[in-house]
Image (spheres, rainbow, N blue to C red):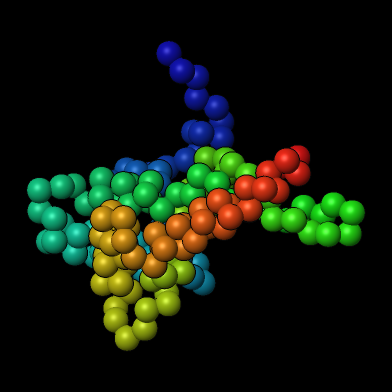
Length: 156
């Protein structure tokens, strides 16, 4: 039986799906402490996803979309002898998740003229299908890391 630490005990999933990832996403979506508004936007987006893909649970689509956007490798600047090199490095799990959430929200907020829940639903569906702005951001990060493989020996 796994032991539950005090910090894990505090973690709560969202009220509808009981998902920790959804709860984290809602907290990142929230502006000015308006959590109820952020929850409404998220749950409306889940309803839109359910309309578009009726045979799948919307929270599964959301989780898979975030998994698809997670980067496995990124570049970090390393200064060696006065020159700055872009060194490709592996990304740990928590940073992968936070980058994926950040990129999805950036692409949603970049779309103007539509309700946020509609943009969020579209972006999540696009990421689920391995398309969209968040996926292109991930692909660009991977391409950058691939282009700088020659600097990999500078990794710390």
